[in-house]
Amino acid sequence: MTSTAPPPEWPHCGDGADPALGGDQVGCRGRRVDPYNACLVHLTTEDRETYVATLAPGSDLDHRGTELDEGLLGQLLDAVRDPGTQRPTIGDARFESATFTRDARFDSATFKGTAWFKSATFSGDARFGSATFDAPAFFGSVAFTSTAGFDSATFIGSAGFNSAKFNGSAGFNSATFIGEARFGSVTFTRSARFESATFSGDAHFGSATFNDTALFTSTTFTCGAWFGSARFTRDARFESARFTRDSSFSSATFTRDARFGSATFSGEARFASATFTQDAWFSSTTFTRDARFESVTFTCSARFDSATFSRRARFGSVAFNGTAGFGSATFNGAAEFSSASFDSSARFDSATFNGDARFGSAVFERAPQVGPLTCAGVFDLSSASFGGPVTIEAAARHVVCRRTRWSSAAGLRLRYAEVDFTDTVFEYPLSIAAHARPLHPGSG
Image 1 (cartoon, rainbow, N blue to C red):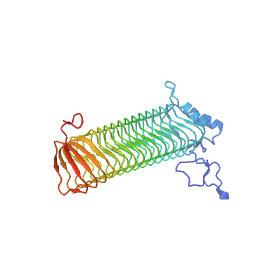
Image 2 (cartoon, rainbow, N blue to C red):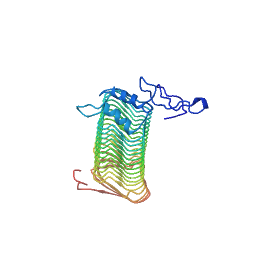
Image 3 (cartoon, helix red, strand yellow):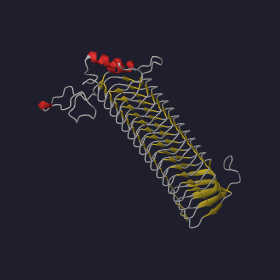
Image 4 (cartoon, rainbow, N blue to C red):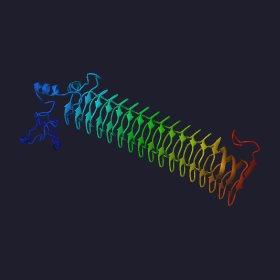
C-alpha cells in the first residue's frame, strides 16, 4: 500500500518509497511486524511463517495500515483459533486503516481486548456474524464496500460506528449491544437490518442516512434511542419495537412509509419537527409517557388508530396534509392539538379522551366528520376554524367554542355537554342536537 500522505503514527513498512526522485515519500503504510522491518505483506515467506508460529489463542494482532487478502487474514485467524471452541480468539486487535482486499471472515471470533478497525476498508464481504467483542469495538469511518454481516454478534463494551459507510447491505439482526452503540452520521446505502436486535445501552443514530429499507422490527431499546435528524429515504420499519426509556426522532425525515405499528414507547417519545412524506403508521402503538409530535409535517396519511397515550399527547402545530386517523385511540392524559392543521379527513371515530381534548386555533379545511368521540374533560375548539361543512359528534362534559369560526354549515350532535359559544362566528347555519344514546360502546 503506497501513499504520498503524511506517514502514519505507527512504525511502518515503507516498501516502495522513493523519496530521492520526489515520488512516494512514505511507501507501504503497513505496521512493521516486530522484530522485523517489514509489514506482514512484505515479509519474506520464512519470516512470515516464523511470526505466525508465535501466535496463539488470545494473542494481540497489530496490522494497522496493512493490505490483507483473504489468505493472509486466514493464516492469522487460524493461528489464534481456540482448539476447543474452534473460534478465533484475539487479544487486542489493531486494524486501523487496514485494507481487506477480499472477504474478511471474522465469523464467531472472540475479541478479548479492544478491537480497532477505525478507517479500515473492507473491499469484499465483512463477516462478523456471532462474533463477541468483550471490550470496546471501534469501527468509526470504516468503508464497507460489500455486505457487512454482524448478525447475532455481541458487543459487551461500547460499539462505535460513527461516520462509517455501508455501501452494501448491513446486517445486525439479533445482535446484542450491552454497552453504548454509536451509529451517528453513518450512511447505509443498501438495507440496514436490526431486526430483533437488543440495545442495552444508549443507541445513537443521530444524523444517520438510510438510503434503503431500515428494519428495526421487534428491536429492543433498553436505554435511550436517539435518531434525531436521521434521514430515512426508503421504508422505515419499527413495528413491535420496544423503547424502554426516552427516544428521539426529532427533525428526522421519513421520505417513504414509516411504520411504528404495535411499538411500545415506555419513556418519552419525541418526534418534534419530523417530516413524514409518505404514510406514517402508529396503529396500536403504546405511549406510556409523553408523546411529542409538535410541528411535525404529515404529507400523507397519519394513522394512530387504536393507539394508547397514557400521558400527554402533544400534536401542537402539526400539519396533517393527508388523512389524520385516530380511530379508537385512547388518550389518558391531556391531548393537545392546538394550532394543528387538518387539510383532509380528521378521523377521531370511537376515540376516547379521558382528560381534556384541546384543539384551540386548529384549522379544519376539509374535515366532513369529527367523531363520534368521548371526552371526560373539556373538548376545546376555541379559535378553531372550519373551512367546509362538518358534523361533530361528541359525548363530553364541556364543549368550548369561544371565537370558533364556521365557514360553512355545521352540525353538533352532543351528549351530556355544556356548550360555550362566546364570540363564535357563524357564517352559515349551525345545528345542535342532543344524543340520547351512547355515541359508541363504552361512552356511557
